[in-house]
Length: 347
Ligand code: GDD
Ligand code: MG
Image (cartoon, rainbow, N blue to C red; front, side, top):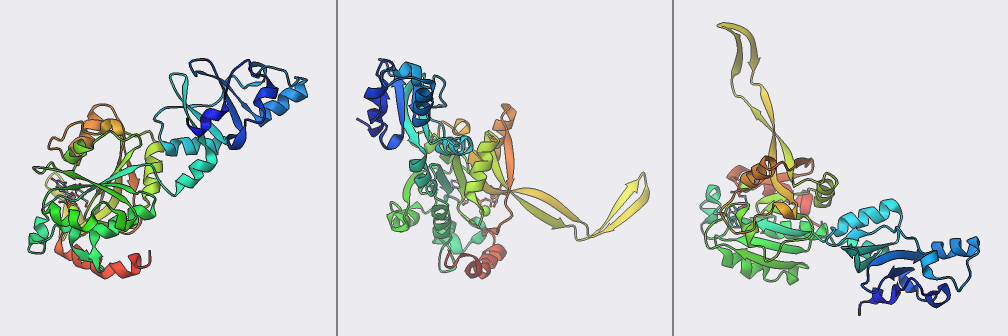
C-alpha cells in the first residue's frame, strides 16, 4: 500500500468519518469502487461546506470539488511542478483514464527540484580524428582539460544542474571510459552505458536506450566544455511543446578578402573582409521521447532533426550565451585548457 492510499475515500463517507484522515497530504481523493476519481476534498472545501450549513453527517459527495485539477500518467515531473506552482496548488492527483494512480505533493516535488527527472545521453563514441595523435590511446572525451578528463567536467556540470541519470554512448576505446566512470557512484551520479558494435552516429545510439524515457531527454556531445544552463534549456523545450530543441551558438566567420557586389558586370559595392554571422548547433539537445529512434540504426542528429521537421513537428533553438567550446580541434583544445581554471575550478 502506498502512503497516499490512506486518503482514498468513498462518496458516501460522512465528513465526520473522513476528517482526521487528511494527514500530511491535506486532501481526500473521493473515488468509486474502480478507484475512478469522483472529486477531491481539501480543508478549504470542508470550511466552505460548513459555512454553507452542511453538518458533520454530510456525505463527501456534497462536499467535494467534482472537477479537481489532475494530470495524466506520464506527465513530466517538471511540467507537473510548473503547473502546481503557477496554480498555487499543493496536491495533484495523477490519473490514467480517470483512475487515480498517484498523488503528487508540492513539498515532495520541491525537494525534487534540485534533482531533475530528465535523463541525459552523452555522446562519447567518436574517434577524435582531428586530435590525433592525442586520441590514438585515449578517446577524445577522456583528454585532460584542467587536470581532469573533459567528460568528468561534463558529468560534474550536469550533476550540478540536478541531472544525475546519465547514459554514456560509447564505442571507440569504450573500455577506458567505462573503467574511469564505472556506475557513476564516485561522481554522485548514476551512469549506464549505451554500447555500439559499430558507430551509430550522433543520434543512432539513442535507439539503444533500454526503455523510452518519460521526460524530455537531454543529449550532448562529449567534447563540449560549457557553462550552459541545462535546466533552462529543458524548461524552454517544454514551454514550446517542441519535438526537439537545439542549443544555438552564434559563430562569426570573416571573409579574408574584399567582397565585390555586382549589378550585371558593374561593381556596385565593395565590402572589405565582411563578417558573416551564423547560428550553429552547440551539440546540446532536448528531445521529446516521441522523436527518439526506436532501434539502434546509424543516424546523425541533423537527420533526426530533419525528420522531426518533415513530419510536421517543431524544432526550436535555445541560445547559449554562456561559455561554450568544442575541444575537437587542436586550437580549441588548447584554448579550453587556458580557459578552464577561471570557469570551472571550485564550481
Ligand atoms: N557513441 C557515438 N557514436 N558517439 C559519437 C559517434 C558515434 O558514432 N560519432 C561521434 N560521436 C560523439 C563524439 O565522441 C563527440 O563527443 C560527439 O559525438 C560529437 O562528435 P564530433 O565528431 O565532435 O562532431 P563535430 O564537433 O564535428 O560536430 C558536432 O558538434 C558540433 C558542435 O560542437 C555536430 O553535432 C555539429 O552539428 C555541431 O555543430
Ligand atoms: Mg566536436
